[in-house]
Picture 1: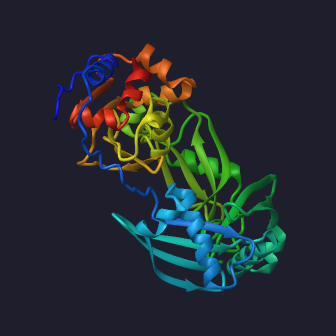
Picture 2: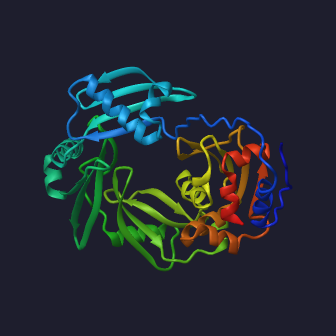
Length: 379
């Protein structure tokens, strides 16, 4: 059974009205709801340990416990869904690869934590390899190492004439102890251009009125970023008016140009959909329930939401086996989450065209899958 509605919807009452179909009637049917469904929202799980397991048996035990905690699959059913395909080990990690029924393979990494001392030792060597030990000692000072993100941060300072340059720079490490990201100067660069000179270069290249400047690192190069102190108009955005330049601190060359570009609203993310759907009744849905959610007035984001072993799994993309499709306006989602009371906000603020619903399955199946809870929350 499929009930289709036009693209113009009649407030949140449409959702309630359609789901109210589930209320009347005697339920004498015994229809399968295909509830035995496992859906993974991740294909990689990482466990950070102070020390690695000594043998494969221990590594497998830790990986299985991690999978059970992440998916909700009971221990007794583990072997029904997960088959160990390969195990490998390096100095800093175990990798256990599982075939998963109805899903892509799942990789479980057991990795050895990077301590601050180790992290700074690797990061120091990396920076010194680019700028030399004398330049490092003169301009870099350790700040902190974050063992959650594996980022070593530094204070960078450089005095030139009356200008005092102060920046926070960083190096990011992977658990294999390689450098996977950086925001640092990549050569022993001297400062030979003052901020005042950089501002004058900005004027020469077309900046007018009041100009301010500050130091930045762009592409590993120390620069003065000089910008027009101006509140942009719609015309500025339409014309992509230039408002700033990056001036090389050594040569005075313009190495970057900045224009006004109207920012696009950020896309709705899966991490926003999970609390939204949980607040409007997902906890009452049975395993195997599948909702397709389309975000309106946005970047056409579509999400597939599947109740899998007690957990609502949200994945980006469409699902041809959806029980229902919900359409919700982007701004309505954002403001509802910010309100702290999603249901009340939706009831009080949803307007025509902001919310819609389409049913794809027999109403008997919908009731057996728990959509009455969604109705009760919204009515």
